[in-house]
Length: 216
Image (tube, rainbow, N blue to C red; front, side):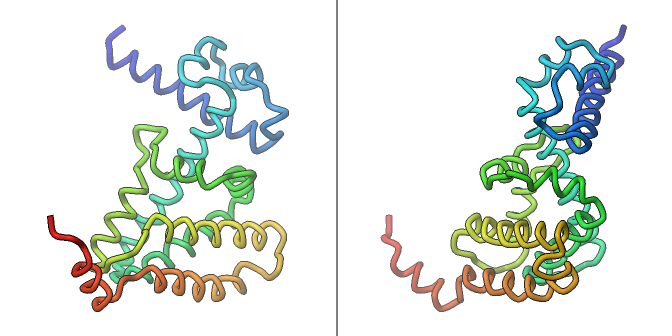
């Protein structure tokens, strides 16, 4: 068997395990899903599972990374086609796109956001789990570079936006609480713009910061 065929076979088994795990996790839950369930449904040996993953929590985290990467890159691809230049408008566009996609797929929303900490989400966005995945952290930094603006603690800014949009969007989509998603979006937009404004370094402030830096 040639190397290309072996690599293709390995990739197929890896993807089968990811797809099967996602189906089982979203249909019957993580706790009720065993590794035996996963390998049986995927049609692979248990030893094959351990070639790629430590345990079912590892595959869950890799799945979160993969699904998050796909979702954000779809949003970024749509953004590039929309040719929006302003940084604030670009983040709002991505926010709306992601929320609409999650509203159309509540199973994916429940899987990504349930008991999800910032640490896991950050890793999901910046640690590609699949060869086709893209580091969204790099995309975010590129967007900042293209904005022509300077931001204080851009990672903290992203953290606050994701926490706000993730938690309120989850409640709105899953429970229509406190309002529907469409009614929530204008409130989110105002708050996201305010967060961005708070972390934007004004030109005067930027000059003062440069003056204060000691010369080497």
